[in-house]
Length: 283
Image (cartoon, rainbow, N blue to C red; front, side, top):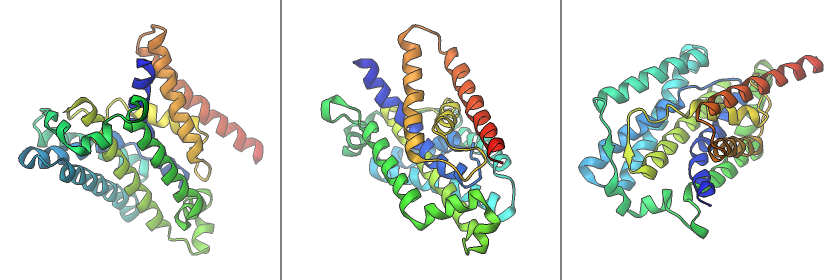
């Protein structure tokens, strides 16, 4: 049972980021900076929490930092016109370096946060000792599904990812749509960083470095096309928990952790290759 509890506590951390990342990729963009946004969000959290001891305000500060990071990336991509792949690689290193500089490479203990009700809401346990992170992942998945399938924003995301020129002729504000999706992934990454740090009651500036492959693998395994215009929230949600189950299975059968990177890399290559082959057949 402990394996399954650990599975439900750790998988949501990258599932929460994979869900809005799906919208970014459907819109025809890419974001590789979210691991560093996890860290910079927690830098804001620690900066507020240490002098005040107020967990709620510290969480708001972390989320604000995530939004600011999303606006920065959106500004580079939409405002200046830098390709999102290049912009997010650059901001990944910039934000990681900023986190290290601001905290001088030192971590911060969050034991005092355990006494707050916010801690219990975010990473406590509820029905049947199930970690609350699991319920948060379900709630965010439902919210993202509603946004993508039942709102004008979701329709615009699909349109600009499929054919941006046609979308503009239909009156879609492509720049605003792209800016919004980058803000959403920034917000989600900061929130995931808070969950990950509160779960272990400690924050290291290296937070997020192990989440890139698993998050990307979840999105592509879920059926999202790297070329944009195609993808579903349900597919990514299921893909995240399949990736989490693979990781738990590797541990359960006694293989070393090196197998996880091999398998995640293979999943990404195979998934993208399948999309390429299918696109060629359609054409």
